[in-house]
Image 1 (tube, rainbow, N blue to C red):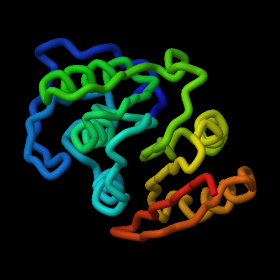
Image 2: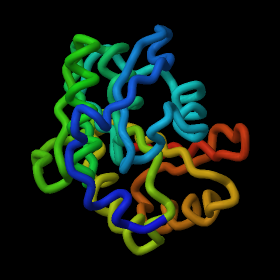
Image 3: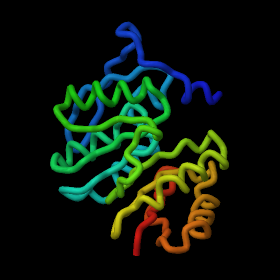
Image 4: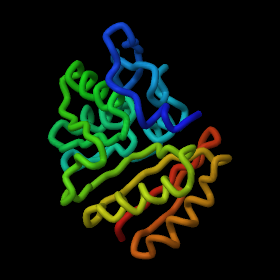
Length: 200
């Protein structure tokens, strides 16, 4: 899979949009997806593991879905916690367009932006991410260095990574790279590791 798949797609034309029925925040809803983004056919297995096993988001706070795709994590956050501020970040313009469409259709508030457009001074109480492992360690580590230090006091990040794609090596790297943060692995399910990174 080339990087073009994630990094160059523009918003989809109306003819390219697909409707999918999925379960988000305990409700069956209809969302729009399209080709040229991650997991266009619905909720992928890794994201499903995070949505099932991560604690329910707090009622209030500032939350981040890092690498949002069409938005299953951001939409779940916003549906669970209407009073929260939810940011969905992705480099793919088509994905961001879909998040905006889906949030509007579901009546929830999500701000979908590129990494460069995200407010630089925002501290996040909660980060959820199914990070793009296939882009390589250099890009992945750069993402972690850019966003994990932005955890608020008592903030938590939950990452889901496939075991055979380097979840354990990422866990070790995170612990070494961020000695001021607590890093552990609360859950393994369906071949995926759920990694928690938290401010002590």
